Image (tube, rainbow, N blue to C red):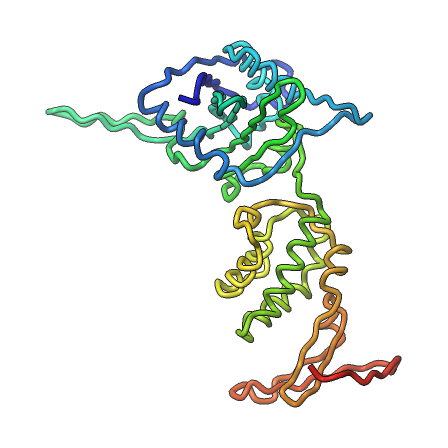
Length: 339
């Protein structure tokens, strides 16, 4: 059995507090319904945690990170006190907006490698109804955890060296669609003192190339138009953190357009990897947008400025005919070989 230890802690919001609370914890047995649920999270962590992260180094470049130190100490001796130090770190960055949380540390061995899954479930409210022969008793509960067993934050680490390894992990925030602090600011940056492994340039290039290839390969004119419009507006995302799926949603790409884009990404988990959008890198990969008419006329312009410099008028909507016009000084003329 790979799981060897499970410790859990009730973590209160403590960011900005001058009097941290006493964090209480418990050691869970390696059997029963709770163990079965946590085993699924542990076993599936490689698949369910698609976002690659790495611990930050010190400002002087030295390979030292306070959160990694706590993880290494816990794995060296997985006890309740060592785990509590990790929970205390989480408490210091937890705001009242994030609320009360139940933290789980699930550690084990995969062959010769140590493995640790850190998971946090938010507190919820619920109603407990108990029925007897003569009455129904209803009780309001303020601390209900795992009401939705698929809504949690997690980070997974696996390596064979506690002294030199455990610098790289994978993470997920399955609460990202709810009203909580963003993954990058709270779970990754503050608690784990980490950053995304996908750099701004690499993530932006992957997106741009996928958009370019999806538009080129698609035979659906509507899909081509949707992608072209998204490319034109993309510069507005400069500096924003997002993933490819969020990019598609931001610009309202249809299911067909999203499918075309996804086909250009070899690993589907990459669709969820977040990165900082680099407008300059995007412009390098998709510098121009071109419209070709059935009459043989071709208009090309800067992708991010196309709709500003090329005017489009609908001539006959039923026939799909349009009139394109552009104004400016002639700078050059070229004769090109036919395709």
